[in-house]
Structure formats: C-alpha cells, structure tokens
Image 1 (cartoon, rainbow, N blue to C red):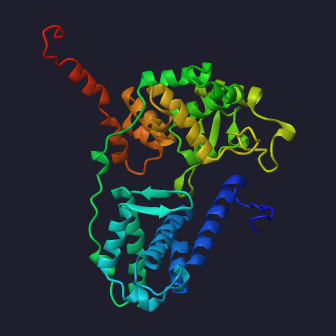
Image 2 (image 1 turned 180 degrees about the vertical axis):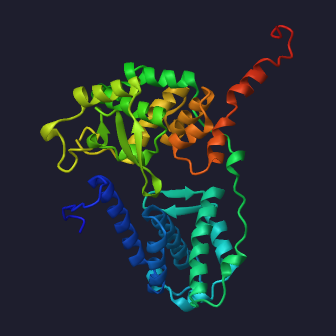
Image 3 (image 1 turned 180 degrees about the horizontal axis):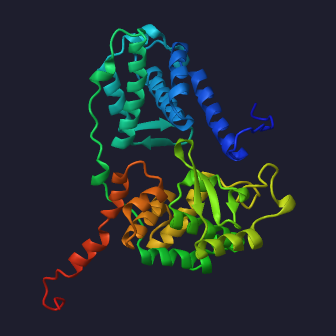
Length: 375
C-alpha cells in the first residue's frame, strides 16, 4: 500500500489535503491496532465512534508502548510481542503494575546499534499515558472482560494547572529582530543564508501569519492557494474538532508578505511535485512543507530574535502565544482574542492576559539597592 498512489474522491467541502491527512492518520491507527491484542477490537471500535483521529492515534500509541513494556521489561506476560498478550494476562494486572509502568516512563532508555537513547517523560506526558490506559481498562471492565476496574488504583500525577505555568512568548523587540532577520538575512550563518536567498519571502509569510492570527501549526501547514479569496479579503482554515473558520485578510503586512511570496518566489509549473499544486507553502523540492520543516524554520528565526542557540528557539505554538499576548497587551477585548485564537474556554485566553514579564522587569529594574543606580 505504501507504494500505491492515493486517489481522492472528495465529496465533502474540505480540501483534498485535509482529507488525505486524516486518511493517513487513520492508516497509522489501523497499523498500530494490528500490533495489539485481538481482544481489544471492541475498544478500537469504541474509539472510532467517540474520538477524533488524532486523539485516537495518541491513545493507541500510549497503549502500544504499555504493551511493549509488558513484553520487554516485565514477567507479567509470556508473550514475546504485544499482539500475543492474552486477556487472562490483562485480567491479572493490578493497579500497582500500571503505577510501576508510569514510574518506568519517568526515566528509561532505548538501546540502538551504536547508541543508547535516554528518555524522560514530564508529568504532563505521564498524565496523558495514565489517561489512555484508564480509558482502556474502564472499557474492558464495563464490558465484563476483566474482573475489576484497576484504573481506580492508579496513582495521582501532579500536573501544573495552566495558570501556574509561565507563558512563553516573544516580546515586541524580539519580534522586530526576528522579522529583520527574515527580511535582510541578518545573523544567519553562511549556510543558512544560501537557503534564505531562495526562501526568504516564504519564510516571512509564514512568520507573519503565525504572529498575526495565532494559527496552530496544523492550520498553517494545511493552507492552500485555494484557501484564499483576495477579492473578498478572507481565507479559510480548518481548526481542531473539524471546525472551519473564515479569517479576515485585511492586514497590510500579511497581504504584502503573501503576495510577494506567491507572485515572486513560490515555485511554478514542473518545479511543483504532482499532487502539491494547490499547497501554499512549498519546500525547495516542490512539496507541501511538513510540520517538522515549519517547526525548524520557526525555531531558527525565533532563536535569532532572542539571541540564543538554534536549539533554544521557540516552537510555532510560542508564536501563537506571542500573538495572544501582543493583542491583549494592545488593549483588545479578551473575548475577541478568544474567538480569534479558537480557545474553547475564555479562561485559557485569560492566561495570556496574565503574562506579566514586562511588569516583572519594570519592578526589578526600579528596585535598586546601590545609591549609584537608585535615581
């Protein structure tokens, strides 16, 4: 199937690339299911009917990792691979066995041919894995397949509330340094400049869209030429939960960056790979840019804005935070920003209103102990 060409017969109003991406996620889910015990088939059906594909993929990935842990790290099963684990072995598992698994995930290693890779899961990741397993064990208990709901005995995992986490976003001066870098090539390495010469208009359009609309990575990645109606001054994006949203296209910086990229730099004709003709942002190979490529691009330019290493640059989600904090900092209504950002609850948007880095700096900067500076 990997070598077969995908042909899309699309009777929905969603673009082909959005339909194809969902199809590929579903295929990943199906592949993982084939690795897992057959007695979980009912649970797979349950997830198909109640979860969106991305959430389903996350659950299945966590469950596969747990089953691999059982076969490779414990004597709780005689199976050599996850698909051979029996229902009786699952029924014999206790809450403490899952707690041991979660503790294992805090710091574990994977040995490769020439290296040992060490992994360390954050509490947020542990909480997600715990949630995935809880849903599975609750389902098996409800269906009478195991004697008790061991999920009730899983240890609690302390996860910071959103309000306790420091919001990471660029400051206005860092944004200006970043945009100067993408416009002039300032602070790029000689090798980076070679690529910049060919992609600077594309890169700027990407950054400006993130900064202006607070788009999610997946929303920007899926943009097409046909997403934009310049005459009507709008474009369409596809949100989480299969929602469509029409965005206004009345920002002069965005319009200029988009038109310069499309008219002057975007590949044309046979430079575009088949099936990518409508994709807005293209790689130098003429294919739709992947999420990883966009993330690498953003980390590079944000690292320049913050005067730090490339590895310490910010992700696209931090540019989403930058858009929110900048809009609220300019006095815009928190409810208007909530709608633009597609936050399900206004409490999420309020977190950005509480971003007080500037206030902290003013306080500390005016609080001198030495008479020489206390003026």
